[in-house]
Length: 81
Image 1 (cartoon, rainbow, N blue to C red):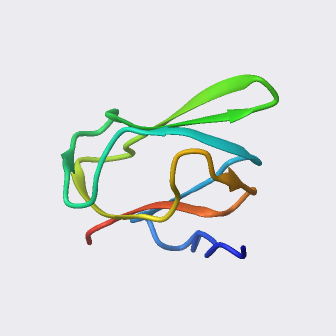
Image 2: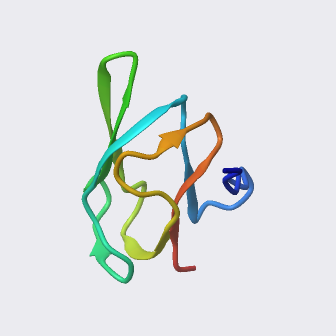
Image 3: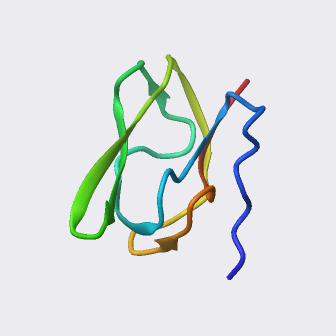
């Protein structure tokens, strides 16, 4: 399945920094988060990475589910503007 790609010019989008798998999503649509909050855990080559909120905001939509394979640049999470 082809996933939407992150728009690098849109600060409200978080994309995958490397290919791997979504281990666990830690937030839901509409949830308010603070800068540094853990949003998602991904795994690549047996290394887990925690995706953190880059700023205070509200999660608009999550574009992946637990267990999904992701590629570099795939859109993971979008924030409300």
